[in-house]
Image (cartoon, rainbow over all chains, first blue to last red; front, top):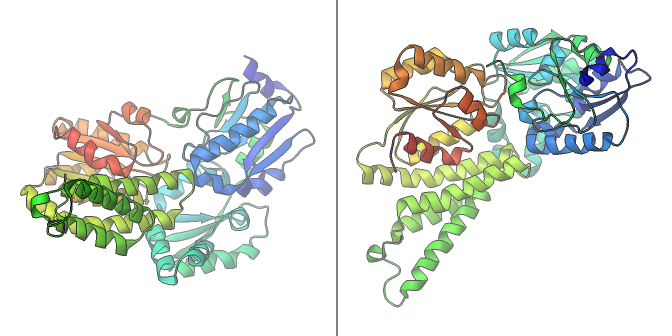
Amino acid sequence: MKECLVKEKKNPRLLILGCAVIEQELRQFQNGQTEFKFLDYGLHRTPENMAKALQVEIDNADGKDYDGIVLGYGLCSNGIVGIHSEKHTLIVPRIHDCITLFLGSPESYNEQAAKHPGTYYLTPGWVEKGQTPISKYESYARSYDEETARWVLHEEMKHYTRIALIDTGVYPIESYRNIGQQNAEFLGIGYEELHGSPQLFHELVCGPWEKGFLIIGKGTPIQQEMFLDL
Amino acid sequence: MIHREINPILTGNVRLDSVDQQGSNMLNRLSKAVVMRDCRVVKELTERMVKVGVDLFEILNDGLIPGMLEASERFRRGEFFIPELLMSSRALKIGLGILRPLIQESQKDVLGRVVIGTVKFDLHDIGKNLVIILLEGNGFEVIDLGVDASPEKFMKAVEKNQAQVLAMSSLLTSTMVWMKSTIELLHESGLNGRIKTMVGGAPVTPIFAKNIGADAYCREATSAPAVAKSLMGLK
């Protein structure tokens, strides 16, 4: 099968399209042949826009010659549904979102979700490129009065019971501990640190994309069902 | 329709053709006020329309709901963020707060009983809470199980309350499979014959709803009352 060729190549020439919040975790495994392109984290809020933005990148890449395109995205609220490449094999981690990437496996994610469903996850990448509860509040308070901003944040966050800062090993975690703790304090909830794992990031960049990855042949659009065990 | 006979401010010199126009202008303004999160205007316009005798369901379905739908669409397109969505919901709630007792009064009986919740391991409830407001506003009795509701919890509530409709919501693709587990549990316990299920939430699709055997799919919160009514065989 043609789509398996990329797996058999020694040094495949890859394009990795990823979300900005996992840039450093992926770049640590950068090798000569691989090109990276990172997109704004805010796309996760609007799945339809995410799919459009990714499709533009894939269409551009179809003008070049890669052995495959790897997505540094999960299903991300259907933000990758419908995208396809006319020319390249797509390689996609079979995960729901980046928390699984940070924790290293769906099993680790499920374990956390079962123990603490009310977890607001933070990583240094999220702090740098994304949002925290405090930065959300600050942005709300810039548009609305303090009372409204507080009410909105409360409505959004009222069911969370802990902040979990994931140490992904590529940032000095001490520099982010304070931010994690301040956010927990701000919301009046618990704080914990979790050890992340480089495993999925490594496989995403370097292969071999075995179990846990989808290999999608050219012309085939990504579908939600590919990610679900029904 | 406007009830002209009980219209206290449109008697005298006001021509009848301008009555409809005024009503429809007010409905448009009401929609816009929901989109613009203006609680004060929503309250004023809703009260005024009630006073002049505009049909309650017309205020709801042609004023408040199109406004909320527009706000939801803007959110979907990334033009609105969570604050705007929540504030539009709050404005809608104010309008519905005025209509609800009047609708209940006019209907005498509740339309039906709906058990609703966000599925297991999922804590997102902005959309679900909006559905509750809308269902109640339309005359349904709603039993809210909150968030992180397990299949067993759904089943017990359905049995206990003799509900006709079970509505499940999720915001995560990782949790929506619990809708399937819940529907399976209803089948195993033989409850599926007397309860209809409807599912919704941002990641839920019509294909998913069909694959898990749900009776109905709800694309947006604003269509929930119509979906629930059709599941119960009501108009």
